[in-house]
Image (cartoon, rainbow, N blue to C red):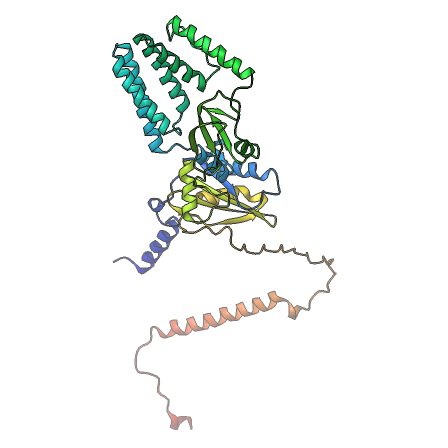
Length: 417
């Protein structure tokens, strides 16, 4: 049977050898391999270098380049949303590309009726959905192909209609003889020359005053036929795309000088500090993040809190400016188990520094020798000697009585008296 002492020693050794927090297999936080973004709450940091220093500190935790940690997450998300292409838009763009390719194959194979039918479907699609990426370029491609079909059919009116439509969308573009027969190239150049002369006479369309004012005030951005900014354009319909930060883009097929009324498109990302799980998750989805770090500078200190996308918030960290490295490690380390952000709440008061005042140094004073009876070694030696004598007497009594036998000692009280 094992001694109780050995069992206790084994228990103690197992306790000290066990890793803190359990075994390695219990660790649940995985490395953050995806993109990381930072958003500063409230006002901009007082220290102009603080933004870059925080990105550097976060990047240093796992050795990623500082450029891999982006800043101004809300602003970037608002810009991204204004140019976002939903899945439905991308699907329509692919379908339009397939129709144009089919029309070109039919033209090359001499199936001109089929080519015209495919081109008609493509025109209906692009006109109904001017928000499609490259809508103006697709419409111009369809117009040029229609002119080629008209040339093959001997329909000069169809040729001029196709070339004029293509020039209206891009009057500066040149047509190469490698893409069209020389007769088509010559007719294209003639129509282009007449169009440019009309611009010199001031006959091109200018933007409506309300639209021009909105662009000048930087309230919106505008693309006309795929080119950014306002400019005079040939008369007729054009693809006008209106972009507003944080809002879904709005596209119209319209004449540029027609009265313009702003379209109130939905605002997906608000220009404010993110609050709530939904807004944090929305930023993660738009920017395709793995971690969003919220930062704030208050009373000379820096506060940080991380949100692990799809998981939750970590504990907030508040510390001095010089401790950014420790804060970055704490924020990236997790765990991310909280359901709400807490960085905007009241911060604990900073601990006042305690200054220790050293005691005054008193020079050593000469001391008189103690009397012999007050010296410790005298009493120690005496007590030790007494203990040795007492131990010797006790041992002698025990050893002396160990070999005796016979009756116990009797005392004759009568004889004594």
